[in-house]
Length: 307
Image 1 (cartoon, rainbow, N blue to C red):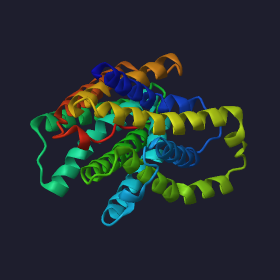
Image 2: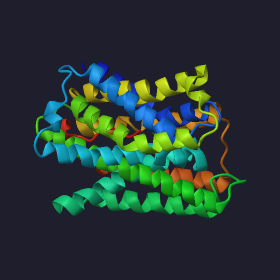
Image 3: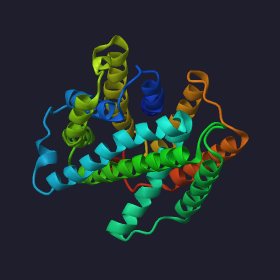
């Protein structure tokens, strides 16, 4: 039923939107490398557990292996880049920039690989979003922010958008080759966890206190990030796409930046300057236009939502 499908996609987007806040509420002393590696590993396990076939072989055969490897690097890039972005720019701003730059990079990937020129809405949305980012960097995300830190945060969030675009595009291609969406994501996430494992080990070795991993707040944070936002959320999103047209699902996922902004404002007490608000509105407007430019030919080949 469309109503249940819409609810599933809204729930998925809302879960995605809690990612930055969940990390911010976690214990002190956490490393983005540790959190990112454990999160993506738990996401892979959850997706595999929810897979009807419980098999990842179709995604790992023949030329699909190279696609999975490419998508895994994108998923591995997304994890630390996103957490660096929200750490330095704030949850609301970092999430919106990561979301907005994802469709921008998707258009560039289509142009580079398929010589498929984006629609005019893509150029318009990209221009508006980049103007918003420039305004934000010039003024700082908060009154007390330093421009250098803001710039690093913006670049990190945009790197997350690039990582998302890579594994979303790879997922689309794998689905078009007959691989289930859950299996495609699970295989990429599992390999991404392996890619991040050396950074995880280095982070653990260099840290004087890794006890937070086994603390109650640490376990709750990791389970929320891994099982809910990187596992169940993608299952719900994929289930919703079986009924909804992909363009409808893409529009619904705009609930994610709204959830992130509301959580940052209410739970974390984040505040923006007047210039920051203006920049945020521009970035969100650009994201809306970019989302409307995403008109997949078939819902089965729609890229997954971000986060």
